[in-house]
Length: 210
Image (tube, rainbow, N blue to C red; front, side, top):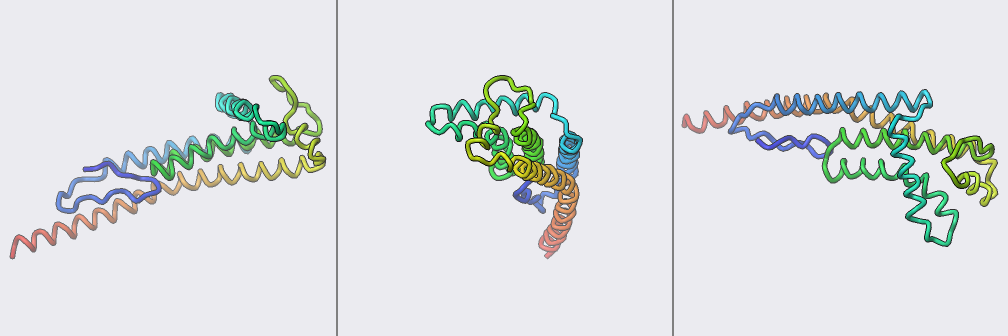
């Protein structure tokens, strides 16, 4: 029996004529969904209490610096400055889109979406600090202090930071909902497949009995 594709696309149908059990695959899917939910809740807790996620924050920092690096050759310093924050959110969002659209893996996509939410939390802290520049940086200028100063929008730092926080919250909340719903969705698909298998068995027995 083919393995279930259990995320965005509906899973392959069980061959009713074979009547193979599907409980093992369903249990595996539900276990993955519960594990994904635990991860999403853990990331949500870090988001709500305002704590950087251990290790993952360093990964975010790496992608942040990569965003600066890949745009360093551009003549526009504002683009180079903003791309650090953009990159650290765009990478987990891109992974979420890849798992959802290409691999049809809902739980993996949800975990990456929650990661994007925590990364947005880090960006919101950075933006809010622009008027004060109190954060200890690893080197260089304060990106958002430079950006908002150049745009003469330093007074908008708090509002922009709030908008980034709300975006991150939406990502984390959507990830939790997706993982929480997955076991129920899979159970419903299992019941439907079992009914189809029973109908197919009855139809096959009637056919051979004629």
